[in-house]
Amino acid sequence: MAKTNSFQQLASRLRGPLLLPGDGGYEDARRIFNAMIDRRPAAIARCTGAVDVIECVRFAREQNLLVSVRGGGHSIAGKAVCDDGLMIDLSQMKGIRVDPASRSAQAQPGLRLGELDRETQAFGLATPLGVVTNTGIAGLTLGGGIGWLNGKFGLACDNVESFDLVTAEGRLVRASAVENADLYWGLRGGSGNFGVVTSFEYRLHPVGTVLGGMVLYPAAKAKAVLRSYFDFCLACPDELSLIAGMLTGPDGNQVAAIAVCYCGELEQGEKLLQPLRSLARPVADLIQPMPYVAQQALLDPAAPHGHRHYWKSSFARGLNDEALGLVQDFMARKPSPATFCYLQHVHGAAARVGVTETAFSHRGDGHDFAIITQWPDPADDEKNIAWARSFFGAMEPHLEAGVYVNNLGEEGGERVRAAYGPNYERLAALKQKYDRDNFFRLNQNIAPAPAVAG
Image 1 (cartoon, one colour):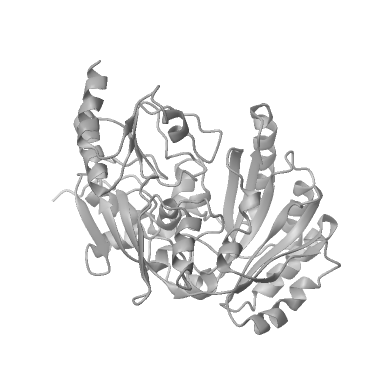
Image 2 (cartoon, rainbow, N blue to C red):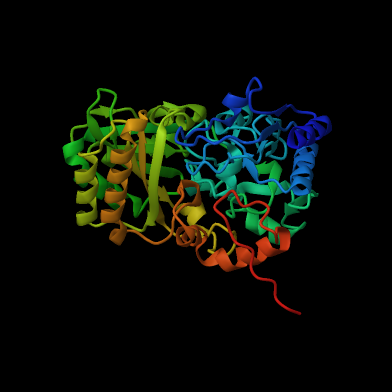
């Protein structure tokens, strides 16, 4: 009863609704992208603005409650939902204002990629985001944000001019190159460790019709197709971003795929892409001029909501023939037709940023390698997870230690350190400054550095 009365006090302080177990909407609010996550918060605060977030943080500190923060709920690790604590739900905060004159956008953290793109594309503008439209902008951006425009315009985090953030003390602060510059550095890749972002100010770029889509080849040609992909990437211009991998095609057969987005002159793009479209006789060639919003939705069918997920991932500078053979062999034995793997090229503008310029440290020309294992039936958990672990274990000697934090599941402290790379110690010191009690710990957590005795 005491806890219920306390939550009633919190409810009276909020503009948005506070959902308790048994309330209408509670079950839907606690469900997220990964159906393996089945946690039950003591309360879910559906915030409408920064003041609601401040009230939640202050209340949770008063009551010594565990807190989780939900933006889009797309994190594979399920950090957005906690058991028995307070879930700060930002999914209703979808405000956005585009200023075409300054080429900027103010965006709230409940927006998903497709929602932000719809608004910016009304003015022929875009900011780099991810590649699946139902991903939340908040978690994606705070973890770096690798997408279709990375070669030309960098990562999502490279295009944030400022953040509004509620700290662990319940204060609203702004972080930019001139205000709280240390925090601004840490938010560009440091994930959700430093507070709750209530607004992002993005820099926008002119982006219109792109040459996009994918070309599909028979699975038996996968090794040769992937080798050609790596060779092609060596001279890839900034305007072109590529993803290669293996997946189940529309006809139910497995294929090797190269997906493309060229944001330059279309005629030049047609000439440039011709070698990738003639590696063998394609199963299908779906590359064509298309609106940028269509390009952004290209991979949506591969990542439906409600599947059970287990991912493994690391960065790769390149893969030799032995490693490419492993990819082909393991994918031929995947337990679930919905499972796929990919190599996403990170290059150009994203690669030219210095390793220590932002918290996201995985710079230089390379590839994000990921095994996206997904299936619908809980009875198939064991065989799908075992297959993914076996596949990744075979690939690991060919991969770098670093891992994209947005692809990281529950994999232990060393893998978390690998996600932040050489910037981990600086991030730990920043955590000590802004969240010394580790109040925000349901994330890919950076432990606060021990205070230095004066």
